[in-house]
Length: 127
Image (cartoon, rainbow, N blue to C red):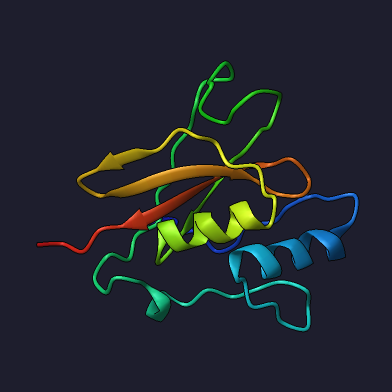
């Protein structure tokens, strides 16, 4: 049977797509291509051997996406959670004070300049 093998793209609606792309470049280090988007290669995984993309459906009344009617939340892999959160705080980015640590990684949440709640995940190296 033919099947999906992974996430091929993430597409965000915005009142000002150029400003949103710029925000991601300046605050999350997303390297923009000439199409005002980015391509993440699995060879970029940090730490090595942690390559994975999660997919999950949530009920409509979930609080996991924060307040409001946000229909989707994107999880971004990061290589240094503490350094990134320090830089985001200095840039005035909204950061949820809640953090979670699990055997498979560390989690934090922020909002982009359009108010979308984002999840940051720093995977842990396997033993």
